Image (tube, rainbow, N blue to C red; front, side, top):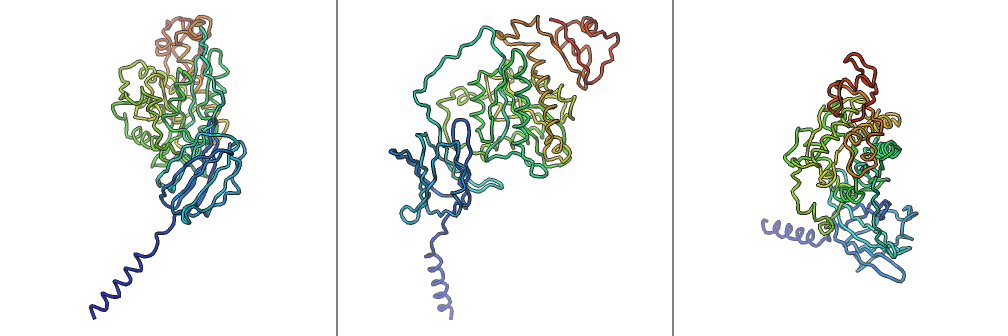
Length: 436
């Protein structure tokens, strides 16, 4: 009897082993358009090998995905404002999925796979970078009295929604709205020029964000986010600078770890930018003793003091952690968490355009106050410092003596200019700062 059961089990084993492995399925396809490239994302039911090659006459990009079937719909893809004329598919070697992108113009393609991460499936990403015909390098003419450049980075974007709040509120949408308001507030100031690192709904890897700030010759890089935490009662805005010696709190460490995982969600691939970014590739960013680190902390303190006038502060000091997007040895950089999107009350405020404008205005006030006091050499503000009327809006915790010390002016002169006889000031009051 035993031998009979052994033969039956053996037969079952042979049948099971003979069954083919289940094919991977393409369950969804999306298109994202960025200023310099178009991204196609294929949602897969599991990991799959792929090969990409190009053809000319006409220009095409061909992708073969091993042992894969297409169940997603391609006809509904929005291809306007992209280099793609149409997307076709068929079989290759009877078992592989072949996707053909018919192009309107030549592009520079790259592809990479992203493994399953949290709620996101395995993905295949195809980036089509625009080619500029007869591209000419132009020398940047630096004015003797240049504008102070502020690079404004709205976190997340595209495939990466960031933190999620009640009612489907997405961090990527909130911070882009605030970034646009901040751009408007700063760009309207004489002597300042604001530039958006991310201007639409697409993802930019951390290192590319840092590179863009440097390419803009920014005097400050500001990355805007909205917190998420395990406790729904966590609340308040915060300002962060990079640290090479560990985080200053558990919250800072948690937030840095979460933000640094964005490349796994948004899709950074394995592109080696080392040849384009030798400084970052070879340097351990120990910035604690450099002017860049000190400037980041000073600017952060100025911004934090202004934010306190319109929202609760999670911490009353600039915290530090190893945020990837702040690792820039050349440009002072801060990360602003505008509030906890996972807190229902703060999520409601962050959704409100009026509150977004208030936040942006206070961010602008803090940035402008710092650079008005310490304008970079060669800037219009430095050349015209004595003619620029400086103003300071009182925030919680401010004192007249502290304001005088911050702007390097006499306390008595500060009182005289503003008609103040006592040391009593109120939150929201605006003071005119004497010329230094």
